Image (cartoon, rainbow, N blue to C red; front, side, top):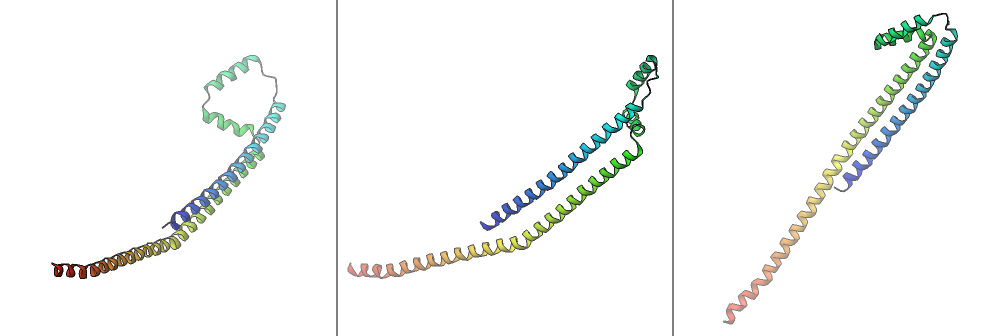
Amino acid sequence: MSAEPIDEQIATEIVEETLSSIANEAEKQAEELEQELEKELEQELIKAEAEYNDSESDEELDDDLYEIDNETFFDRINAIKYIIAPETRECISKKIDSLKSTTNTLFNKSGNFLWGLSTTALLFGVPLALTILAEQQLIELEKQFTLQGEQNNDLLTALPDEQNQPDAK
């Protein structure tokens, strides 16, 4: 029975190490993608600012500020489409799809690994536990037989003494 918890501990440690390494890899890839996206966005914003024409008057700027306050979140997201060039959007989309694909693959592989590990543990662990339990029961049974044998020997040796005592009276 002591072998089973050790196997479970080892299996648990292996699973935890595997999952943490998968999570670390996914986080690193996400951080790298985020940094690349930020760099590209900064470059696009610099280009957009360079192309911006300062011909608007102060009144038009005030009107634009008022409109910004009334914009919804969806309006702002929709406006990003016009700020970022189509090539950049396509590049960002490809990188996000690549990250999704990589993450999906990592989770599928880790799921397959965990399934294999748990199946192996069941195929080897359960029979091992049953064998250990049967062995312990056999040892207990042998102990009982030896105790009964000793008690019978004590009774047999005690009987002649009792028979001798009544004769002495």
